[in-house]
Length: 244
Image (cartoon, rainbow, N blue to C red):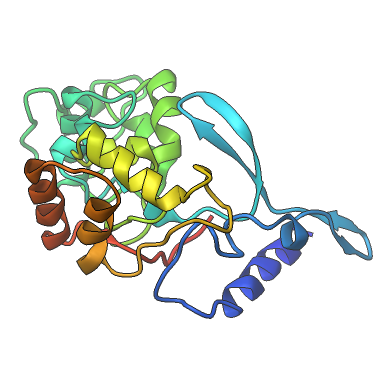
């Protein structure tokens, strides 16, 4: 039954007519007709996820979630990691120490000597995280801080964030101003102010994203400059290649 759900999801992607762009108004993101109570001989399957804002649940979505809407723990900078919900600079430094190849701890971080002193002892990874749950092995990360950050991080992808699907918390961690984040989200949601509806706007190319956002609302020259720099740094994309 579980494999049938995976095969169903794979079939949906083969129907994608515009693979270079991924957004909330595509079939994979929210489509009860495709993903809810699909009947098989031995029962029914649904592909469902719960949308959260912080720790509060906002409801069920019948569809998949793209990993590129999340921050990649293996490529994110120290500043981005420190800005994630539930994290601070000390935790960010510990993550960087966990994934880098040296044995020199950052001021708030930890290397092998710390982890070997625990009971039971274990080694510092000194390599990429292979799962989000691996965070629970890192110094300073508690069950509470893990629950806060879990909806916003991933270990998949090349680190580029999909501008069409990143949440407000992810955009904030990337250093965007609240005014710019509001403009991006309002542009994406269209006239009805809601995600995953027919009037959603989609960024089809990062090159014209600044123009679309600034034409939509009054953005200061400073915010425009910041947005352009992030796009030039290739921090964003408009497509996703990994889905859960």
